[in-house]
Length: 247
Length: 252
Image (cartoon, rainbow over all chains, first blue to last red; front, side, top):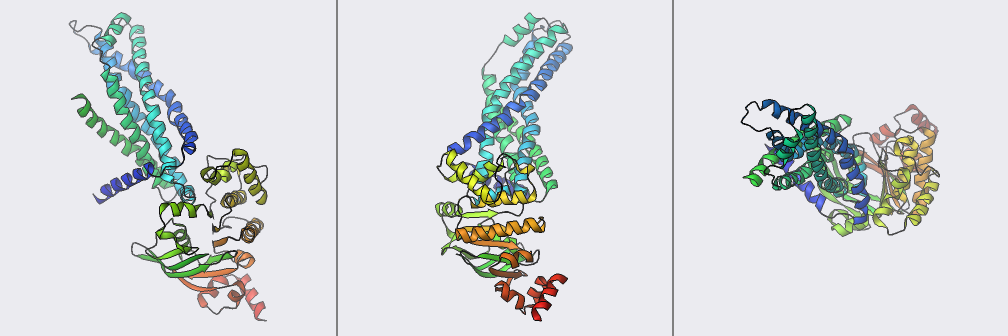
C-alpha cells in the first residue's frame, strides 16, 4: 500500500516539476516538433492499419449477427459508426499507442537516466523533468486527436468497403446507417477522452523511465511497467469519463 | 573556492560519508582519491546537488549551495562544468549540438557566434571537423574529450570530473589528464577530480584528499603522499608492485 501511495506521490511531484520553472519557449519549439513527428506522424501507419481491419471486422460481425428480417440492414453501418466513434477510435487506439509510444518514452528517458544524461541536464541547471516530459506531453495532446479522427474515418470507410465487397450490406444501406440519428457529441466525447489518454500515455511511461535505476535490465522493466500501468490507467479513466460524459 | 563542511550522508542504515571537511582551491587540480565504494562519487554528487547530504554544507565562494534560492542555484549552475564517467553525451544530438547545448540554454548568442565558440572548444580538445558525428560514432576517448568541451564551453569557475580515465588506454588517459590540467590553469577554475587512478594523481594532482570508510583519512600534495606513513593511504597508493618499487627507490 505504501508503495502504491509512494508512487502516486512521486508521480504528482514529478508532474509539478514538469509544469514549474519551464525553460525558454524557443528551447521547446524544436523539441515539440520532433516529438509530434515521433509520437504522431510515425504512428499514422499502425493506427490506420488497425482501424481499417477493426472497421471491417465490426461490419462483418454485425452483418453476420443480424438474422432477423425485422432488423434493417442499415443497422450494420449504424453499429460500425457507433463502435468506431465511441470506443474504438479513442480507447483501443490509446491502448495500441500505449504499446508503441509508451514503451518508447519509458525506454528513451530510462536510458537517459542510467547513462547520466539526466544528471548532466540537472547539473547544467536545466529542469530535466520539464525539458524531457513537457514536449512529449504537448505533442501527444496535439497529435492524438488527429490520430483518433483518422481512426474514425478509416474504420467507417473500411466498413463500407468490406461490407459492400462481401455483399453483407449495400452501400446505400451502410450510408443510411452511418447518418442515422447522428449526434456530433459522440465525436466530442471521444476527443475529450483522447486528451486525457494523451496525458496518461505520455506521463506514466515518462515517470517510470525518469525513476529507472541500475542497468539495461531495469530500463526494460521500467518500459514494461510504463506500458502496463498506462494501459490500466487508460481503462480506469475510460470508465470514469464515460460515466461523467455520457450519463 | 569550494568548501565542504561537516558533510555526512547515509542511505537508509548505511553511513556512506561521515563529517567530511575539505577545501578545494581555485586554479588547482584537487583530487579526491580512494578505493571503490568509499564514498568518493557520493561526495561529488553531494557537492553538485545531485544528492542531498544529511548534514553539513557546501560553500561555493562562501555561499552555501544547499541553502541557495532557485535563482542563485541557476546562476551557480552556469558556472559549473562537469565531465561524467561515461561522458553523458546526449545520444540524439551531434557532437556540435552536445557542446553547444549550455550556450543554447543560457546565452543569447546567434547560431554563428555559438558555432565559433564550439569550434574553439573542439580545437582545444583536438576534435576539429568532427562536428556532425553522433556519440554512437565516437570512441571512448573522443566521448570524454567531447564531454570536456561541453563542460568548458561556459568557461566554468568550478569544474567537476568523475573518473576521467576509466576505460581509457594509458596514452589517451594522458591526453585527458593534460587537458584537465591546462584548462584548470588557463581558466583558474576550481577543479575537483574523483579518481582512483594513481597515474593521474601523480601526473596532474595539486591537492590530494584520500577518503577511506566514508571519512577524510588524509590530505596533502603528491610529494607528501609518497612520504606519508598513513597505513590506509599506503595500502591504497602502493597496492601495485610497480608503485612499491617507486617507494623503495625513493627511500634509497
